[in-house]
Image 1 (cartoon, rainbow over the protein chains, first blue to last red):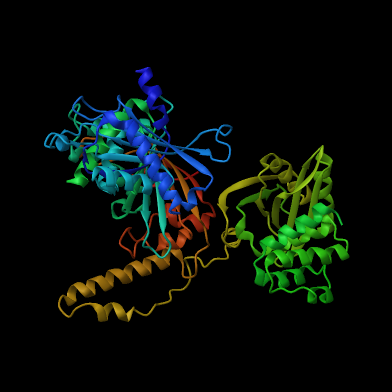
Image 2 (image 1 turned 45 degrees about the horizontal axis):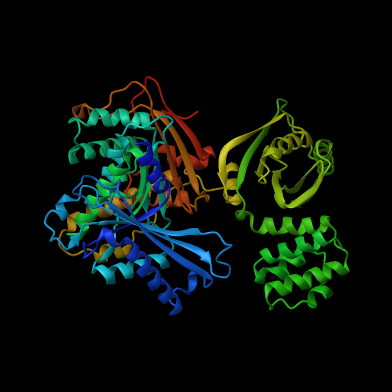
Length: 288
Length: 347
């Protein structure tokens, strides 16, 4: 357990942008070193072409493609694959330190729905998470698309998805003191745009959720709706504003935060797999 | 001229929008009209500021004059700073005659007795508003001219607007000096904060148009009628009636004129959770603790537009509409005991 959390600790408290990825053709975990080399050469070539001008001409980019064997749901899932770009000053390569400038990882947690019907030659890693400059993301994405004939798409999170996350994550038991469950709403199309942050003390939110959620180990759409309606009614009682008419854009809890633009932040390692399972499901939905 | 003074003047001029520099220097009055004519105000700001510093050099500017320029800049662009509102009080009813010289002397004396290294400057504006600029140092270092506090004290009222520096530890001393100098007994912070100094003043001095003005009928928007199709005229009429009603109610609750400009309002809710008993959900007898924050470039106008946009009821909750009259944007809301649920008390 501890060794696990150490390995995945670097994933916590960072902002990750989400993408869905179609299955990779002829990808093999045995060739990760080769992929590192090839991607490295590709990046160098792109920089020569002047396509990566903003990144900084004097930096050598080193690529490491590794596997994260513990990041998966069941043994039927492909283990997560991590791609890391580090920079080193090309002026004095021996003296300067290596600095991590970009990370991206592919993963699949409980992706049976997609993987079980796939032909042998395909690898199912439908979720891609990125932290780092957009310019690197574009280059790495292009290489993967060319090499494995796959397709990346930004994964945005609808208010419907975010409501599920709010309810689900509120129900997770965490150590005190724990952050409140916060919902952020946006009303952009007014003459003066309005943002509303509605944060509920976690204990109180959990007390509400505990009375809403009737079936143990299972969450239904109806339960999520009741939970959210209760919160909306409480708000309406005070302010006479219909939150349901506004756009839910962000949910922040002790377990994780999610933004409608497809950005996630993991806060608790014990729930990492659980959150990834939900995100994998959303990615698969987008692919199909 | 001191190098630090020169640099400070240079940086202050750089903050000013290019088209305003000449006017501001004229208001400052430290450089003569002749000197101003030697400066080309159409060149790049970097060069303008160098030229200004050159002229100041000729006149041997000291930090005192540089500070005045900073006050003039902040008076023109007060919205760059965050302002809090303070109210002073005393037990005696009589208000003594306000003597500016006496005030300045007492204020300086109080600050300097605690802290030798401070720069203090005053400037009086219309409406009896006294602007005070304080640059703070420590017992061992000269005042940092870039970390200033500003006070706008309306001498005929018990109110002061303070924009503290990042060095928050000096705030109590500043408040004390204000109380002593103005012959009050104590001072407390009101729950009201904003970047818009003018709006704070409007709210505190009730200068915005309040909601009990004489009713002034507005002409119905002709375009709404023209756009609706001929069929469903009854629905159209109902819509117009409802739109009219919302506009009328908005006028009643918000008043006719432009709203004071606030950027946020914060509510700490400690009320009970209630729901339809059929739902069989939470029935605790303890408060359902929430923190609600509203943010907008122009909050009150934004809230006013919610009902017409169909997102809120008209009238909007008094928790929101009371913001201008109560002159506060921080609230703690608890349940009123023994009353119809839906009535709240805010201490």
